[in-house]
Image (cartoon, rainbow, N blue to C red; front, side, top):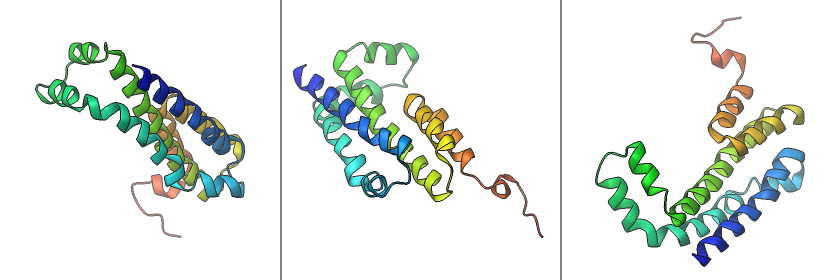
Length: 151
């Protein structure tokens, strides 16, 4: 279990500065260079995930591939501490992936920090909700209409 704990802390600490840059310096050149580079933001989180996931692949495939997942099956599956940490590493990697995408959209749409920061905080805490709000906050109103408005 020691390697899983180490991967947990490595990943959990690694994401802090990434989120801080997106929240508090979204348009700074360093943020654009660092967070804008997927190899520096997302890929390093895939390595700890792979270290924990690879030994668990037979268990994952057997458990989730042999029958339709049910709430009881998922609860039992996540009763293993290694699987819980694997789930956490999964959350971290995909929260950063989704958050980075929303950050890119916020910067491209020139949204002010008082809009981008709360949305990105939601993206970190409740990623699907933050992602949805981020998409909506970066939509042009004409894109939301089911028809084209001619001028």
